[in-house]
Image (cartoon, rainbow, N blue to C red; front, side, top):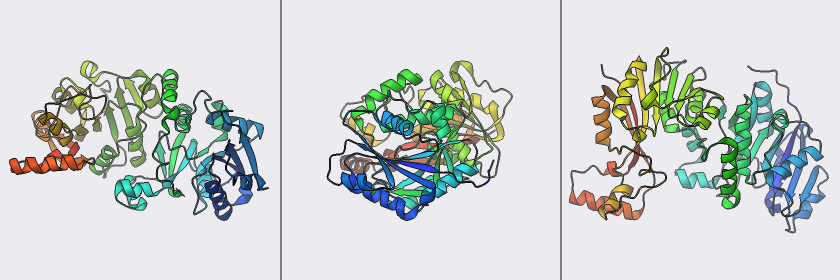
Length: 456
């Protein structure tokens, strides 16, 4: 539901620590591009000791708050500042290493006050690291990443902690940020999960950018406090890991398979926290999303926005007997099942006539498995292609056989790659020389995305 455009005052809380040069650029970009009549600027200095700190302290248009080293955690610094300064309006927490090239505050403010049920909003982040990682410009990468989004406000489970617009009412209702946590990434993840719990949305605004010259800050999580904070998160939420990112390859495949429909029923087997189902909702705003998951704690989070149930599909089947699905998703799940072929056979009765199964399946023929195997090593790991919990191992041939024998025809097959080393590439070339009939691509594809429809 859209509301009348009625921007309100916003407080920008800038966090800094020995980054006075970057902090100055951050503040000056706000002064240059933003409507200052609607803003209050607060700088929280976490025991900086560099010379240019004095510049920040001397600016009479901002409020400067200083914390001694070890005096307070990230969460407590923010909470104490809000309470001591009696901030009673929405606010933005902004890392001082970022700066603006446009008035993104007004964009976000407009979006928040024209839409209901928004708890947090983050802009997109532009940095050189994206171009290094993805071998394309930031605009090209984001156009590809959010190709099928139906709105400039993209719903997510959590965002990066570097710039987040936060509803004051949400902050007050949840009692503020959890002061048991120290790492800013974990603090914000906990807070945004609480936003979902309170029926509010966490969003990314696709038409607004923050910039940084810092090549690592966007993607790297400080490990000093991360591990201990994640143990605290397990105590609070009952989970030892939090998969808050959707599988965008699956989302895009669903979007292409059902491009002609506005309303679809989607079931995800092994939905975890529901991040991929939330991604589906970004493409099909009227989608009815359902999930089955073994982990009870994960189900409780997925239930914030999906019809999710705790269920073991191998023993309990699919409990939604009165619903026919347009799509059933298996995101890295089939390899964990004792009888995956039997399960996808069973799914046929729950699919519409033109329904499909969309799955991501790891490829054990990948060179990272083959090369150690040549030397006699086939070592299982906590995650990855040789995850300890994998019961079935698939190559492309085995995937094709499984779907065919279960009565499906594969209408879309896509390989997903990850970077390989020079040693691995050399091994592939040597294997190709020794066995010319080998398709070397099958040793490069890390996993396969499959869309299959009933053949009967």
